[in-house]
Image: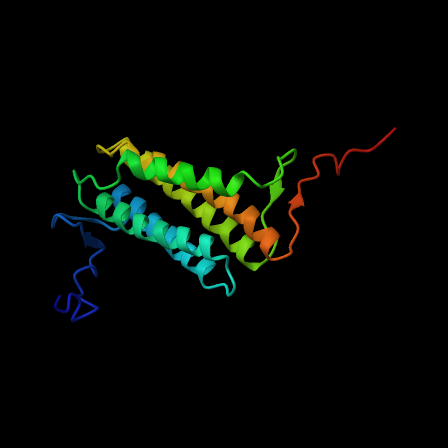
Length: 187
């Protein structure tokens, strides 16, 4: 494969527009650009998790696969009418999620984000994926969107929550439980 990006800057976006994958020019604040841009941000946040030394190999492998999926998903959003994400990818996420979740203790309370550097980074990635999902739903009000895209993002945020719990234990961290009664006075 030859060089795809021989020049990084093109100056074509200096007028506040950007090119979609099909060549269409749209404003940089277009709902489609917001959706695939937020997916890109989520992918970068997962890269931060992967940059933490000493991740369990199964977590690193899973998150690397997710990064590839997110790149595909962003490409799908960038090219109107394209469909890359299929139901099989959602099923694969569910299978991996179940595998990571099975040995964890049942939740009785909400968990505050944290637990160690990798776990905290994973919680941040989860919230960015949730924002990406919201951006995709906003886009779907204006343009047709493959139904598997928001479903994939929804499952991914669940997976990242579970992986954050796994990482908190791996890092010898503790999950900080939300104390819902901390402001109540007795008597």
